[in-house]
Length: 207
Length: 281
Image 1: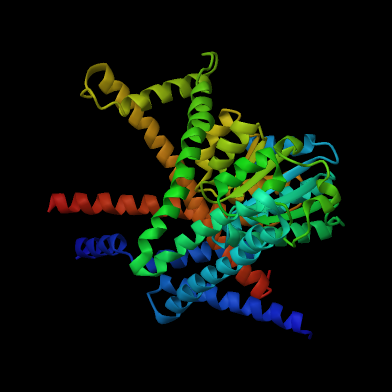
Image 2 (image 1 turned 180 degrees about the vertical axis):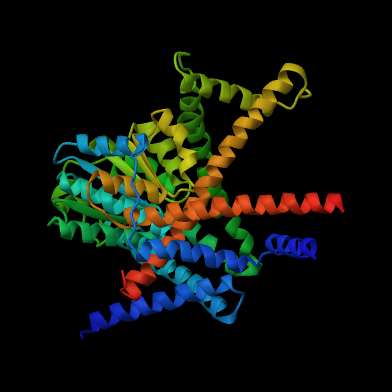
């Protein structure tokens, strides 16, 4: 058996061990589960760090510095400086400098978020409710939107017509929550199926 | 005596050790899987739309895949990306791979390389792995202008212009579709910045937990297709006639759902009976 074959088998056994270690929590909390949990967190953080260093910082900052010229080169000092400011969080005495870098990222995210939400979500979604009342589905969509919105109107007591509308809105909300919960059950079971398949197929080889 | 025994039994049912329920669920998952039982799959309109859209792309067109998931949702999304990649390669559609989640990139890379090898596709000619860049929103916006602004090189450091496939691909306008494989909120970023701003055609493949959040976008025609959870994968596997984990999982999935429904009914009935008995005494 070559080293590649050995590593393949070793990897499968490691994965099986950690899968069973995580499953052991279902019986009760134990040291093997805690070991698996900590190894997972450590590995994820380590992997993320290496990946970002070699696939982002190196090509986009270090290599780019030597490849580019003029403005395109010197503008790289800005993200480098902000990145260094972010690292000051590790030194409590100067950690407040990191706020400048955080403010920059928050500003970019907020600016993009506001325009994105209006242009990409609110307007197209409102437009999608302007439907002809020529089918049951369209009527359900329009009624559902209106009565659900009325439930979130809190400037008047929910009595009379508003009360009826708000209560109907709750029914629509409950249907939505029920659908979401049903899908959630399916998702969780899918994860169990995925791990069970790994154990039976890749590890034990019985299916 | 009988009443006491009955009461004890009801109490026992009401306070059943949850580990017994875990064991029941594990058995109900395992038995159909070990017996390789199958369940028929009905194709839903949202998956059919995704299939029809990929089917309509002419040979030589390009689809970008965004790997926005990691190992925590691998059982649901890996079967999806595998069948979508297979469909693209069957149609001689070119594939670009990127991702907004660094830790998910190995899963996407593994899926791309294994499927490309299966169909005899060549790197740089039929498919390109661009890799990951941080800052999802900014990355998605920037690729709408020029992919090279963000990905000057691929994940191995090869300049994009050195890859033949990339010659005529500069932004979303040169792509037939973007397939967003995600377990979080990134499809919303793609909708806001790639679809709304640049008119990119989006297919979203997401976990069952996330799927209900995207039906409104499908209804608003902001998506051209939607695959939700393992069922979405199973339907797509059926459409391309390539059975995989999705289809294998449908029988355990159905049996577990029946078991859960039975447990919910049992729990409610025992609760009501106990309440009634307590009220009577």
